[in-house]
Every structure is written in C-alpha cells, then in structure tokens.
Amino acid sequence: MDPIPSSVSAGEGAHSEPKYSETATRILDAAEGLFVELGMEATSLRLITQQAGVNLAAVNYHFRSKDALFEAVFLRRFGPWATECLRELDALERRVAADEEPLTAEAVVKSYVRPALALSKDPARGGVMFVRLFSRVLVENHRQLRETMSRQYGDLVTRFTRALGRALPGLTEQEVEWRMHLGFSVMFHAFAGNDILKVFGRSAVSARDPDMIVKHMVPFVVAGLTSPPAGRSDR
Amino acid sequence: MDPIPSSVSAGEGAHSEPKYSETATRILDAAEGLFVELGMEATSLRLITQQAGVNLAAVNYHFRSKDALFEAVFLRRFGPWATECLRELDALERRVAADEEPLTAEAVVKSYVRPALALSKDPARGGVMFVRLFSRVLVENHRQLRETMSRQYGDLVTRFTRALGRALPGLTEQEVEWRMHLGFSVMFHAFAGNDILKVFGRSAVSARDPDMIVKHMVPFVVAGLTSPPAGRSDR
DNA sequence: GTATGTTTCAAACGAGTGTTCGAGTCGTGG
DNA sequence: CCACGACTCGAACACTCGTTTGAAACATAC
Image (cartoon, rainbow over all chains, first blue to last red; front, side, top):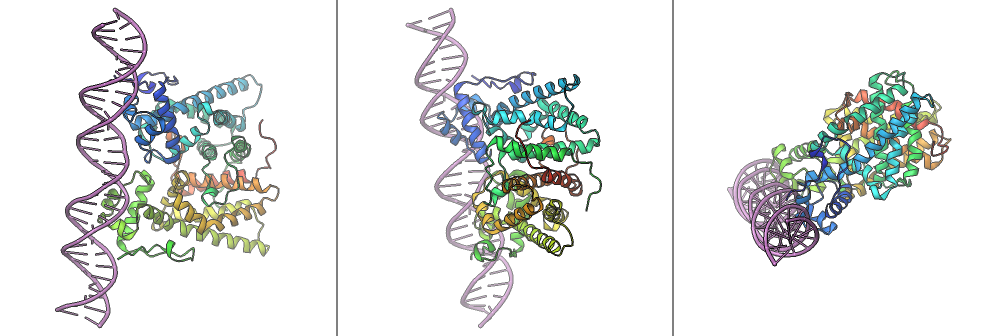
C-alpha cells in the first residue's frame, strides 16, 4: 500500500539509485520541468499530475508528500552527478600520485565541470535541468533537502576543498574555501543561465549552449582561483 | 481613493524615488525581509501585514496587488543602487578622459561593487537585503518586473558593458558580454550568500561580512575578467 | 458646524492548495 | 476461480490564498 521507493529514508548506502515505476517517473519528469520553470511553491500538484497524465492522488501515493517529491526530483539528478564527480576526482588523484600530471586548480575544476557538462548534454539524464534545479536550491531554502544533502554528500565538498587546497598551496585555508565557494557559484549559475544581462533584456549571449558555457567559464574560474593571494582589501 | 504612489506607472523619469506613507513603508519593510527569506510565492499577504502590524487590506490599497508590491519592494532598493553605479561610472570615465588614470577592468568592477558594498553596510537603505533580493529575481521569473527593469535600466547594462569592452581591448564583443555576465553573477551571489558549501553544511566561511566578501571577491572577479582570451575549449 | 477626501478595519468571497479516503481496477500466484 | 497485493481513480476535506467590499475612523478645509 505504501511504496515510498526512495532510497533516502531506507538504506544507509549513500549513492544507490532507486528505480521508479513508470507513473512515478512521469511525475518526476513533469515536476522537474515545472519546478525549474516556476519554482517549488508556485508549482501545484494538480499542474504536475495534469502534465504527467496521471491521477492527482498518485503523487501522495508514490511519494509521501510534495516536499518529498521535490527532494526525489532533485536527488535523482544530483546523485549521478556527485558519483561522477568523485570518480573524476579519484582518477585525478591517482594520476597525480603516480606523477603522471601535477595537481592544478584547472584539473580540480574540470573534475566537477566535466560531469556537469556531460549531464547537460544528455537529455536522458535530465539535460540542463539538473543545474537549473541546483541553482534554485541554492537560492531557495529547503531545510529538509539541505539536511539530506549535508548528510549524504558532505564528504564530496570536503574532498574537493582539500584537493583545491593542495593545488593552491600559497593560500590560507579560508582563502581556499572562499574561492571554492566563488568557483562553484559561477559554474552553477552560469550553467543555469541565471544571466543578469538577460534581466535587462540586453543579452546577445547564447547562454544556453553547454559547450559555449564551459569554454568561457572555465578560464574565468581558473583565473580567479589561481590569482595571487589577496593582499589589501581596498584600492 | 487610489493612492498607488508608485512612480513606475506614472512618470517617464526613470530614476525618481517615490515617497511612501508610513503604513506603506512598514509593509515594504516587512515584505522585503519575508520575500528574501521565503521567496515571493511562499510569502502570504497575511504574514506580511501581521509582521508589519497593519491591516490585511492595506496592501491592496497602497499597492495595487501582491505583484505590484513585490515590484515596489525591489525597485525601492534597486533604484538607488543603479543611480550610484552610474554616478561612479560617470566619475571614472571623466577621470579617464582627463588622463588621470587608465581604464582598467578593476576600476569598472569597483564602480558597481562599491555602491553595492555601501548599500550592504547601510541598514537604512536595506543593508544586505537588496543583494539577496536581486539574487532571487535572477533565479525566479518575474515577467512584469523584468519588463520594467529592461525598460528603465537597460542603458545601465549597456554602458557598463561598453566600458568593460574598452578596458579589455583584446576581447571580442561576445567575450566581453560573457565576462560581464560571469562577473555580475559572482558579485550578486557572493553578496547574497548563496553558498554552495553552506548547502552541504560544510562552510566555515563567514560569508556575511560585506568587507570580507569584497576582499575575496574583487580579486577573483578581476582575475577572471582580465584572463587571456579563451583559446581552445577543451583541455 | 458640515462636507470632502483619505486611510483603516472586519468580514467575507471565490478560487486554489496539499492531503486523505474508500471504492474500484488490474495483474499475478495459489 | 478466487484472493491478495499493487495501483488508480474521483470525490471530498480542511485550509490558505489574493482580492473586494462597505462601513467606520480620521484628517483637513470651508
């Protein structure tokens, strides 16, 4: 009677990926697009179920609640990305340990940009939706989701921060965290297309082509990360 | 019977600042905090008026609707910032024209960062609220507000983009727009405290001190802006 | 004083929300 | 064939939402 197939509440294993029934998948797909477009609060279950072609009660049957649905929508995309990021970082650190290449900030950045790029170009795994979802999560406050994230994926951030610290030995720990924060921000909001110029209707930039984004963003981020340590604050 | 003191719909003069009655101000103040904290959709008029200590119907009396209230909340902060940005840019271009200093990317960045910093440290003008509001507007889609912005403040972006283009002569027009986009993104989301690390509960960074933000962010942005033109896309 | 225009207030309206319930349908295993 | 679980469906529940209304309170001017 109560499927709640979400692996989140069930197992301890962090990175398992639950299978969803066809109805549940249809709901997830519809909800994903609508959450991205309208935001969580402005998206009603009736709109979701209507667009998914399923009954209204199906949401509360397959997922527990609207909040749990949102969490499931997000984690369905976030899980694969996190897994791939760790895989990339593992591979990088292995190559570095074998002295095959130096540990540069650029390599660290690409370890999390490349998976995001791959996902952005793969419609079967959500395409660009995932990053736009993430940028919404950053701005909105989803307490429950935030707890789940920090519980399941906290080590991911720790590992990347440590790697970046080793790649930028001249910086204090605080400076590394700051640049980590700034670098991640740029990536997510660039991918998500949260373009200030767009707000003013003055953007001629085709900010939606993932390859274009990476081409312009990675040098920008790397330059920021590798800039000399902050000396004085004002001019 | 119908005050609607908003200068937006009335005059053509772009940068005038309407005066609000005490009740209207109380509503604006309460709404500002709640919009930032909960988002526009999740904030109810009842919550706003309760926190402001005014009657529910006052919102629809002093402002036309909830949407119009949101627009007023935003423009009340955005107007002064835009005005100061243009003043800074005017001053910079005057000094450059007089050969008193060269036109650098850093100077351009500081022309819009300094006003944001000043506002962030002045509670009377909203403090850090304004930037957090802006970062929400970037992610959420407020069609009407977007139209107002592009109508009233489009020239601001155009002028800054042109200035940045002159400061970075080696870049194509497209590259300038991209970096403008990235640089603005970093500033707003850094000021707003949209910290990815925070989502994971792993942030030791005190990302709320405006001076600290500027100290770390400006070098990061300047380094990104002044990095050599993008050569090839992949490693 | 009355008259006039502005601002507040309590109450209600209709629409839309997430969620629940119980009957109904379907498909498989005994 | 029948029973049992998984799943779907329509209807309803109890709220909350933004907005409107009409009367009261207030200020100002004549």
